[in-house]
Length: 219
Image (cartoon, rainbow, N blue to C red; front, side):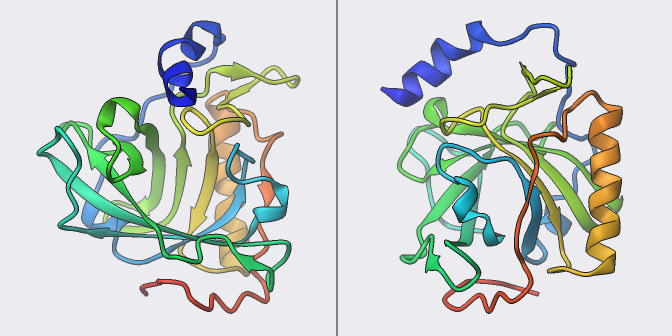
């Protein structure tokens, strides 16, 4: 029922004056899934409250998973994180894997993401807004849970802080932490501000001191 509300009713309540931002073009899927990503900053969502913003990482692979009523490209998405601190409870202790779907070959950065048993109509947007510094070398990436269509007090827009579909904004780097990661974060924040996306809701993710025990990472 929640997904039905988010999919068919919630969009009519959104701010139509927010900037129209689309996923990036010339997206290199092979490079994007080459190795794991570490989240440096992100918004909270209905499934990731502030206490869960520790050691958050994502690994994506090609897969033989299938999605009901869909015959296109499917990628497996494994998410990792800790709740309550870098040594807290593992958020995805059973290694539950999602299925990202590239539903249009001409816009591969416009993905849908959901548990593999859920059809596309109920999946949530997973948009890669930008990645760089080069198409053959993605060291950073900005991922949004769809179009930034909610206006925040600073006058800029982003996605929702609640629910599942239509929520989320993440700043990815290949580096776990350090000066290089910090520099990329500043570049990504500047990109967002320049495109009318608020950074006021981004929160730091703790990566220092993480041991990633039980995670699936690839380098």
